[in-house]
Image 1 (tube, rainbow, N blue to C red):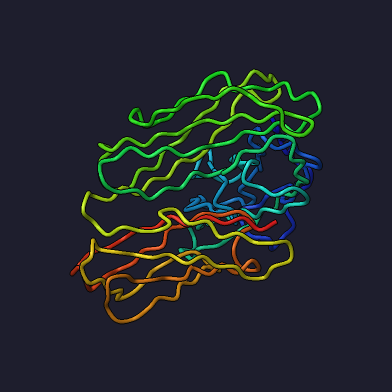
Image 2 (image 1 turned 90 degrees about the vertical axis):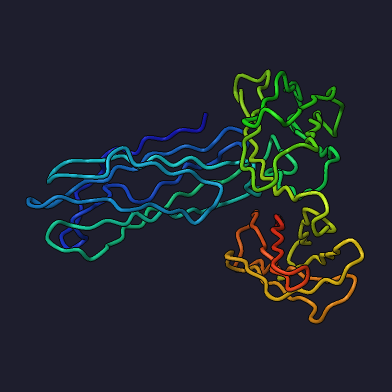
Length: 326
């Protein structure tokens, strides 16, 4: 496990605000992919009067989980911000993540911020493709998708011993490991049943390994299930693929309504760096081009694109989109 506890290194400087981080920057050096990268930042109430209320925490990377152990601090009290980053979604090489803590002081309702920075160099010895399995599916037919775990180390001794999912309806089948370069590769077949309830499903696939240094791998599973007879999407779960140095890449998605007329009224996407262009008018098919800007979007990411239709009237389609910038 990649874990670092940051100690108190120096007192906060006057004027830095009532909430201070004695060590606001951390550099973990080389970190091997596979286990989650974990770090703790200390936060201290540096003033002598009035309580501080921590109102929110946010990260520059959607692959991270943040947790503050206490949200109300009296003068002199401290809290710990725990950060866990999924290294499987990170590209190889130097990486920087920022965490923003928002808070208020009893004497002033103004929301203030303090920023923390975490750096590391990712060494990709173990990879999972895709690192996030995002799917859009419809109808009552079961669909199977694959996850491939590759151990690039010369020893190549890691195998998947057990696979579980937080959704009991999802079936996981572990295939035998095979040679891959100097290491090994192993596929896990993920089957989505036809009777999965319609709507959005946000689950976690956990792979238990035989490697003591990397005992567990967690892969987010995001499924958008449409009812039978709804609008069909092709591809159902598009991936935008970049070549090295490419600034912008896109993927074309086609929508059909079983031979009936279909028309797009508007498209929504909250992810910075992702835009969507769509065809106007109605016809037997509608198209949308999803464009990802590598300078604005994260290196590895996933988001939902919501398409509103005027025909069929009132229909809404949610498409999970993923990308990887080498």
